[in-house]
Image 1 (cartoon, helix red, strand yellow):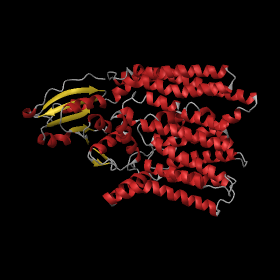
Image 2 (cartoon, helix red, strand yellow; image 1 turned 120 degrees about the vertical axis):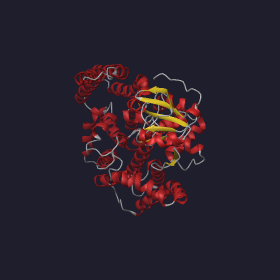
Image 3 (tube, rainbow, N blue to C red; image 1 turned 120 degrees about the horizontal axis):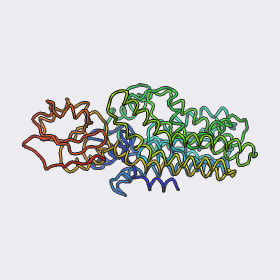
Image 4 (cartoon, helix red, strand yellow; image 1 turned 135 degrees about the horizontal axis):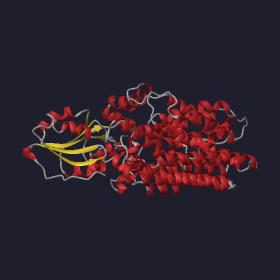
Length: 547
């Protein structure tokens, strides 16, 4: 429950992150306002790239707590907490109470789960579904063939259906890949028996009952265009083509996985080696399933034509469970083995502390040198000032943790210190990063100004769905300022949002000639400009200081 409490306390620390996070609160708010709560819309257009569940959960939070950023992030905090509780309970069923408790602690304090439990994003929901389904499948595989399995089938069906409504068919594909990879290495009695086939059919039927109604309703309302967009375009085409511009190396997910598994990443190599043991215990079956889960998901996403760092989140709970099972055995291991793990952990923490403390200084020095050599006035000299409040407290905490790990022999204290570090560092980072984040994402301040005076809003060269949320108004993204001239000539005025360099080239050009322009707010690289005809000048918008 500490994860839930910390997430709720820090839910409003940071503005909405664009482009991805802003889509979900903005879509939820607009869908409710337009009277189509179950038919998502954004800026007046259908929003079918994700199923209904992430929007519906945020809509429910808005109805209970008001239309605010903190409310939009409550569903993710609840889903992250549910993930921790489910992992702890099902690992306890398979490997004992200590392994279950360790799994819950480690999953809840990984950087990946800490981050995605604080953002209004569907990734934590689909991870909850996939990991729950895979653990239920593991429990189903190791049960006696004559034991009733219908309750596991029902639970798995509900879990898969939840994932399909959260992010689509990937909630089916990943558990099936895990099962296909793990089954040959698990001693399963009568895998093809009638009872097991019956259980699988029941799970499939429950999945259809949970997920199909919304898809059927949307198909009846919109026809083939919905199916083509929601299922084909945003699933099959996203995976098989580079149309979305997210193609990267097959090794792309290594770095996101390392970051998301902090501060436990040092234990992964020794924990993963135990997957290759050959015994028939439920605990080893759990290791096999979790290893197969991480490997199959890593391969699945690595060969996708669309790769985003957030996809790595699905690898983290299985890897965290493997680390928890390794720690569970360490409690019974000889002192020599414990001492070796203590040294390796201390070394990793010391390196991490050095990087966090010295990183801003090194980066700032390199950026200043680049600017000097290029003969350009430095706009990066403030990098140390921006990054130090974020990294310095975290680096000091990691340094303290390294001392604790090295000097205290108790494994329980060492695990507790790492868990405390994993829980506290995100809070420190968010608190230190608030000024920088508000400068990088000035949309809340701009939204307040836009909401005060009517008129269309044009955003040049960027996507900022959170601006739609903050302004409570549709925002039209355009590729360049030149394309706006006909709209500016026809309309009575509006809002123009663009970066400083573009505005410098636009303010004296033909695009705005004959119009009155006023800079109403600035923030980071962006400028908010009120554009009007002489006959239709609105009351002054004022000028807002840069965040």
